[in-house]
Length: 331
Image 1 (tube, one colour):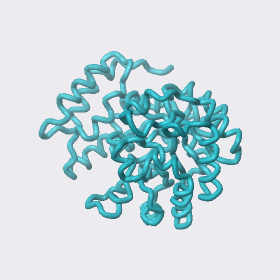
Image 2: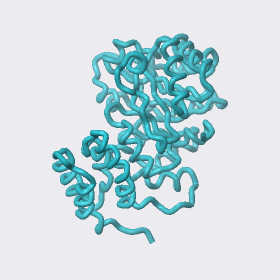
Image 3: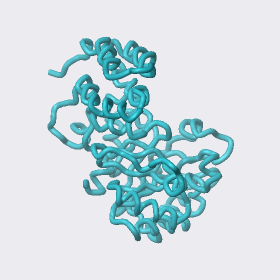
Image 4: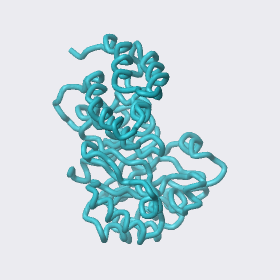
């Protein structure tokens, strides 16, 4: 397992309905060092749900489970289960602003109760040996002063023993804005997160929100311990092919995008035998060739054919034929 500092250096944000196990398996083909996150999973789903909400592939490591919940005992139970399944980290969601999440009393509304968040973290830390981290916002509603963020962080760190915070550099409006609007309308305030790191130098801090390039990530890393990329990593996954070399100092060759697609074939074939539809995997691959001639044809072919009965890796090969010869090769 990687140490907590290096594992936070670059990560892909947990995104509901996007970062499922197929997505993570694909992203791991592009970057070996990036920390991957599950979608947020509620404690209720894990404890009472009929499906296996902790399923993942061994190839995904390092991988963190993001939990949604506010009951310390339930969170501790889920953390213990996750550690037994081999997850590398546990993360508590204190950032999601959706109404559904608020009604369950977890997500961003928990920022209003730092003592409860601290209790949740401590309950998990008491029963596992893997890192337990918090993903939060810089504020909620009218509680958006720097003092509020500083006090929240201090309480969760001191009372809960949390030593790692991933901070989305926007506040959240708990009413009046949709989750999508909450990702776009509240202004980003990167300097506020930088200041928090200066005030808590012993804590590991990563920043999230609006990061689109590895150059931007490098700028943040001059101030902070880590960067989390969200939608850009999903919609333009080729950016991940440069992460290990650009941010982790690896000397390995750049990832060949066509080879990365073909390296998915054995996984896809195994999934098809389990009843998975090809489109459930390939939907995460649509943006791979963004900016390359043929990218639109690649997306269209997969979108039109991956959901047809009997669709298999031959669909991917046919789609690759529309783009593979048009990719510039590195010298």
